[in-house]
Each structure stands twice: as structure tokens, then as C-alpha cells.
Amino acid sequence: MVRRTPEVLTRLQDSANRAQDKAFGLLKFKSLVHDPRVTSRVGTWLGIAFTICFVTGVLSHFIQHPAPWFYWPSRPINLYRITQGAHVISGVAAIPLLIAKLWTVYPKLFERPAVKSLLHALERISILVLAGAAFFELATGTFNAAQNYPWSFFFPTAHYAVAWVAFGSLLVHIAVKLPLIREHRRKEIDVSRRAFLRTTWLTSGVAVLVFGGSTIPFLRNVSALSERSNNGEQGLPVNRTAAQANVVTVDSSWRLEVAGPNGTTLFSREQLQSMRQTTAALPIACVEGWSQTATWSGVPVMDLLKAVGAPAGSAVRVSSLERAGLYNSTTLPGVHTSDPLTLLALRLEGKVLDLDHGYPCRIIAPSRPGVLQTKWVRRLEVIT
Amino acid sequence: MRIVLGVLGLAALAFGAWLAFPLAKDIFAWFIGPPVLDDAVVLPIAGLLSLAVARWTTTAWRWPLHFGIGSTAVIAFLAVTEAWRPYGFPPKPGLHDRDYVTGTLITLAVLWAVVVLAGLLRTRSARRRPM
Image (tube, rainbow over all chains, first blue to last red; front, side, top):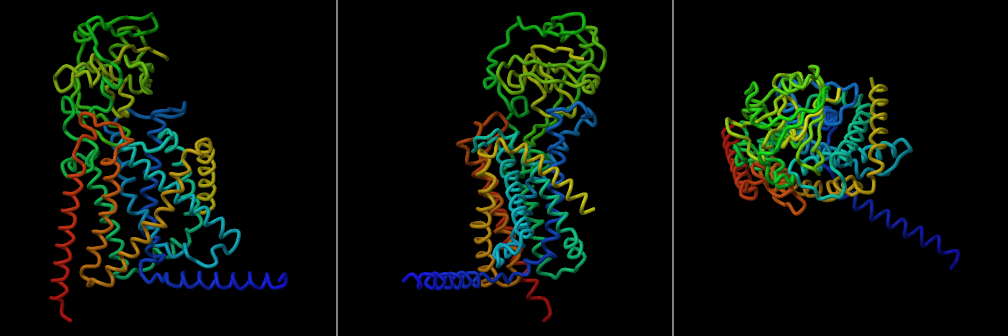
């Protein structure tokens, strides 16, 4: 018995291997699209989409959490709208590209032996990391655009961290595959493979069409899955309502505090209205990708700084009547406070600001994320 | 060029891993789940559908149907993020306040009308082509 045990095990192993080989034998991938010429072409577009996503995402991160060396201009006024719109659009376009790319290499998943060498094992693990990070970014990003959070982690922190993993592993993958990519991109492709590529581009186009209306104005009435509608107060969506912010009423005793080098000056709303008013069409551009231009009127922040004796181009800390929110206090950099279109807005589309839009006054500055356009302003404090 | 890309990639990867490490427990399921789901469910279904399309339709219908099936899958995923909201923020004035189910159904109806039209046109064009 003792002697026969290894024999039985060997037989069992052999029959298991035969069954496995038979099972894999059934998986005959005959489709012409499982071809490096197709993979390299889809991969190139996926790489471009991910690069746009990564660069615009990192920019958005640094605008919200600026490092001392970081500079973000206030012009053109639509700059942030464009970069964040490109972030969301390229992310949505990348979903079909990623699935198509993985489909073209799907037979590799069943390659035998699964691991040929240590290097081969490392390459397979690195591809798992790349796929995991890529899916993570696209899935969580899409859910975030819908402000839907079926997870326990804090989205901005996780999305930013995994973006570096995704982009880093993408660069490593390109470095490993570059000779193959170059070789196969030069080769001609036949009608069937071309049809697969066209179908992939078209599917990406459909994804942009149904989702991109929040970002691309002319798609607004076509995009069924656009997060925004035209139902917002005063024609503009409300991302954070006064009720959510616990700002229930603002009475006539409200005063704006402006802390400058010579102490704190108080301004009533009437005093603000009596100052020089500037009217400008400026976009609200949300980190979730939606944006809309509206006509705002109010006092240029540079005039308020001048009124309290602060030097032009000073950075300003803006505090809201909202006590608990993540963005109840923000910093306006000097490049924005010295822009004459950075306003303490009192009116929207010619009418007094609705409470949901930040009554009694709010910040509206060109080329800034919506979360930094502080509403229900209570205090401006010169910090440099 | 390859060395530069590799070194930059490894540096970015290491930085990302360092940032993500404290979150590893929380993000694990969302990191591993989607590629496993893709490999074990989405791609096999895509393969079977692709096989069915290849076996039971003519060449003229093949790519319109692939386009229809692929786009339906993508639209369905995008629709889930807006239409299924037990963990979502409640609708706000002008945001997430549309009828996404009806919108999705209309979009799918238009999509499949385009697929059928493309299939018919390609069939007609294939018949007219001289043998």
C-alpha cells in the first residue's frame, strides 16, 4: 500500500492534467482580433486616454492641494473646465478601449504553462496590477461622477493614489512591450481586424455621447446619462444645497469680515452693492465633470483687498457660514485675487443669489474647481 | 527611451503603492474584483455572443451586432451608476434628477434601430456587389 500511493497520486495527477488540457483544448480562440496588430492599436489609444486622465487628474489634485512650487493660471477662464472635462471624457472613452484591449489578449490568460520563468511571472503580476488599477480608476471615477459611493474608502484619496499605480504600471508595460508595439503598429491589418477597431472606436464614441452631456454643451439634450439637468435654481445646478450645508437663513445682521493688514473691516450687503460692480460670464466647473457658464455680478476681490489696504495679489483665505463641510474654508491664490474677474458675487443672471447658490455672497473665480468657489461667504482673510 | 519609461514607471508605481498602502484593506475588493469579473464573466459572455453572431448571422450583420452588443454593455454599466443609488447622494436641483431608466431605454432603442438599419444597408450593399 505504501509503495502504491505515489503511483495512485501520479495517475490522479495525470488524469487531472488530461482533463485540464481537454478543457483548455475546447477554448480555441479562432477570432482574428486576438492579434498583436490589433492589441497595439487599441493599446495606443488606451495609453493616450489614460495619459490625458492622469495628467488632468493630477492637475486637479494640485489645484485643490497646491504644493509651494505649483502654479495654476486664472486664464483662460475655461481652462479648468476643459482639463476636468477632458478627464471625465477620456475616462469614459477608455472603458470600451480597456475591455477591447483585454479581449484581444484574452487567450494569453490560458497559456500553458501559466508561468514559464520568474520574469514571466513578474510580467503577469505587473499586468494584473495594471488591469486592477485601470479598472479601479475607471469604475470609481464613473461612480464618483454620479456622486454614488458603494464603498467605504474616501474617494479622492484612493482615486489619486491608485492613479499613480495605474500610470506607473502603464509606463512599465509600455517599456516592456515597446519593440512589439512598434513592430506590429507598422504592419497592415485586414478588413476584419479593421472592422473590430472601428467598432471599438464607435463604442467609445457611444460612451462619450451618452455620458458627456454634462461637459460638452451641445450633447446636453442627447446624453441620457448626463448627471446634470436644466432644473437647477436660477438655471444652474446646485451641488451643495443650503440645507445640506446647514445654512438655513441669513438675516440683515450678516456682515462680511475682511481681515487685512490694518485689522478687520465689516461690510454689509448694501455696502458691497454700492461698490464698483463687475459682471462676467464665468463657468462653474465641478470636479465630477459637469460645467456651466452663468452671468455673475459682484465686487472684484481685488477691490476689497484695496479697500482694507492689502497689497494686490495677496492670497486670501475664504471662510463660509457653513461650519462642517470639507470645503467650508478655501484659499484663493494671489494669481486669482489679482484677476479682475475674481468676484465676490452678489447676483446671478441679474437676480439676487438664491440661498442654494450662496446668498448673501459667494466666490466665483475663473479657471477654478467648483468646490473651491466658496458659497455663503462669512470672512476673507489676507494671508500673505 | 525604454529605460527612461521603465524607471519613471517604477517610480510612479512605488509612489502610488506608498500612497495606497494605508488604504489597501478598503480598496482591495475594488482593485481585484473588476479584473476578475471581466476575465471570468464579461469576456466569456463576449466570447459566446461573438461565437453566436459568427455562427448564426451573415457577414453583413456581424459588425453592426458586435457594435450593438458592446455599446449595450457599456450603456448598462454607465446607467447603473445613475439609476442604482442606495449609496448615492440624493438628487439635487439640476443634478442626478433626471429619469435615467427611461433615458437609458430610449438610448438603447435608438442604438438598436441604428444597428438594424446598418445591418439592412450592409445586406443590401452586399447583394448588389458583383460576385
